[in-house]
Image (cartoon, rainbow, N blue to C red):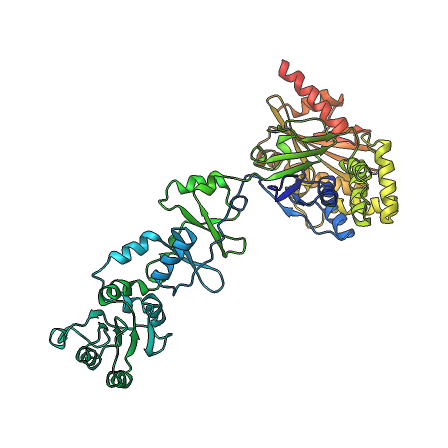
Length: 553
C-alpha cells in the first residue's frame, strides 16, 4: 500500500444498522492485522438501539461519526509553524520570518489560543513609520526587547520592566537637548559625558549609550538614584535610532484574532478555496478540534489535496453513501446487496456475494487471510448475521450465513436463540424514543430511473411491540418523506417469530404500487404481507419492477 495513505476510513451506509456498524469494525480490525496502514471504522449516522445493545454487550464504543469524506484542511499539508508570544519584538518576528521562509506569524497565548496575526507588511509599515516617537511607551515595550533588538547589554534596570511613558529622542548637546527632553523619555547618546549626564538629570527613563561607549560611574550613580535604565549597544546612533522602534511587541501591530481569517481542521477544502478569494493574505491559521492554534496553511497548499481513502461496507448505492464520495478514493467495497450506482475513478476491489449479511463475507475473508477471530469481534459478526437474517428466518439467509453465525457463536460463547431474543427486544424497545428515531433506525433510499423512494424496516419479537411501533411511526411517514425529499416511503413492521410483515406507506400512487407489487388489497392504509420478511430480497425487487412498469406507461 502506498506510503502516502495515512488512514483509511471504513464506512457503512447512512442510517446504519447492526451489519453496517459491525462490518466496519470487523473489517477495520482484519485490515489492521494484514498491513501497517491505519484503518478506522466510522459511522455515517445515528446508531439504533439494537446496535447499541450489541456494542455494549461485547465491549465496544460507538465508531466516530463521519458526515462527509470531502477533503478537509486536515487532509492537506499544514505548516507546523509555532505560535509566537505576544511580547516578541517586531525585530525578532522579522528574523523568524526569514528563517522559516514565511511572511505570516500567528500570535498565541500560553494555552495555545489564537490572539492575532502579523504579516511581513505589518512589520514593514512599522519600520517606515519614522515619525512615531512614542511607539515604545504606547506599546508598553519590555526592556528585554530593546536589549535584544539593539544587541545591547543592560547596565542598570530590570529586563522585565516596560517603557511606560515618553518618546524616543536622540541626544546631541545639552544646549540642543534643553527643552526637548521630558520626564520618561528614552534618550540615545554617545560617549559625551555632558550629554549623558544632562539626559539623566532631565528625567530620562532610559539611557541608550551607542557605539559601546564608556559611561562614567558618576552618570551610572545618577541614573541609579533616579531609577533610569541604562543600556549599552554596539550600534551607532543612526542604526540604533532606526532599530529601536522594532523592539515594539508584535501585539501592538498584529491583526486581532477577531478579524483574522482562519480555518478549522474540519473545514472542507472547497469552502476554504471559496473563502480565500476574498483575502489578500497567502497564509491562514488552522484551528484544531479543541479550538487551539495548530499551524498555517498557504494558498498553494489548497491546490495540492490528499483525498480521503475509504472502504465501503454493506452498501454500494450512491444514495446510501456518506456525502462527498465523488471526491474520495474508494479502495474497496464489500457488500451483499444488488449492484448499485457508485462509480470509482480508478479500479477498486469489489466483493459482492449473494449472502444474507456482509459479516458472512468477512467471516470467509478472515479464514482466507489466516487471521484468528477474537471473541469480541466474533460477537459483533454473529450479531450482524442474526440481525440481517432475522435469526435465520429471512429468505435472504443462506447455509453460509447460518454456518458462519453458529461458528462465531461458538467463538464468543453465546447461545444463539437466547441472545437473538435479547438483541431484538433491545432494538424494539420504544421507551423514550421519538417517531423520527424509530423511522430512521433502519431506513434506506433507493432509485429506479427518475423515481426515488425510501424503505424502512423494524423487526419485532412480539405482536405488542410491533403494534406499538406502527402506532408511533405511521403518523410520521408523511413528515419523514418530506424531510428526506422523497415522493414515496414504505415501512415494514416485521414479526420475526411468525415470519410476516405489515407494510405502511405514504405518497402519490403508493397504495397502487403496493397493490400491484405484492398482489394484496391494503386495508386502512396497511398491507398484510405473510411470509415477507426481507427488504432486500422480497420488497425492493418487487417495488423496482413495479416502478419500472409505471415509467413505461
